[in-house]
Image 1: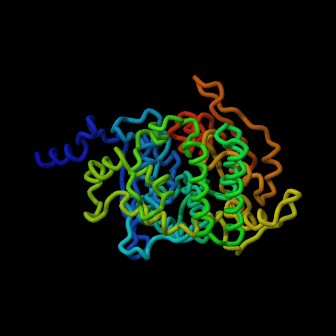
Image 2: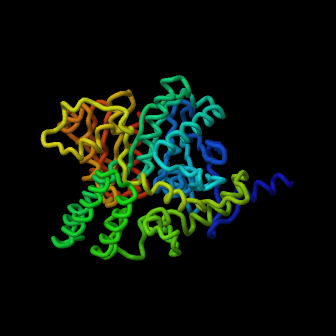
Length: 467
């Protein structure tokens, strides 16, 4: 009787007027102490697919921010089997693949640090922590060592995914980690922050959010931010980025950064997640972006029934309680492109004519280039048509400037349309060798939430799921 009572509490608790429905698939979760005093939480869903789970890929999902929670937002708001209202999600990735959600960097979601000095300060630290976590994960569930694995990163999670993929590939080649990494997917990703920022003025002007005068004002600040990045002044660049965002919001009367067609001030692009108005240590952009993912029904769910279900969360840990500190710790690294610290370089003989010194420096030791040039991994890039913060034009710009011999072939390859039963054209893709780019229509920054069916088709195509 006691056992039945516990099960009812864990799996049948009422949430927001409805019963919490446990997913049908097998789940497991755990903590990994990636460094002394730094604890990272992961949550695995085994696939519901008819095929054996070892015959379907493992997708590692990394949320953005930095400081947004994969186990919370990515799981319950985007691709997991249950939504934030505790209803089964009709279009979810667990029906097709195994999905591993990781609260990363340390301090995000249910992950936590015991000392503030332990927060990650750069992408290299984040990558090392993720390799440590995944190595521990594979020891706990060794059957996944041979399963095709793909790292999916959304927004800032894409920046982290690139570093993770590179570090994991090196560890695998050295025999330190036994895994079957096949590729990395970068969704509306903060790979080249300068290129993303420089795309804001023309995008906003073309969509009538700015007039010519406003265009020039935003362009001036974006150019100034690029100059600070060129000088290596990361913190100053981040401060100018924040200033530029405030200017854009003032000039556009509050354009939605994540979906420009969300014009109603009472409608958030994040499906009923509400912003908490209290300041977070003076970091306006934390509230503007990460705080938006941490409140409302999702916060109640994670700190209520989910916390009780998991049963391993320390009493002094609150879901999202350290995420603002995570954001602040990466301030100096925030505007940096994903680089290799100048340790590796590539031939520049195939650079486009007129390529600027600044662009050469930003992309000379790009980790995306390392993956394309020095590994057999698939590099998958996708972007939502209606995203502003990482607009498609900026993403295309850094892709076309990659120091990769195949870039010319990719540029000349024709796009292929992706139809759905009820949509003539839901997306396009272009693939050449190990680079594939997906243009997802009618979607903003959180593509799986805005265009779930189109994104699911893209995911299946990218990970070679058939049937």
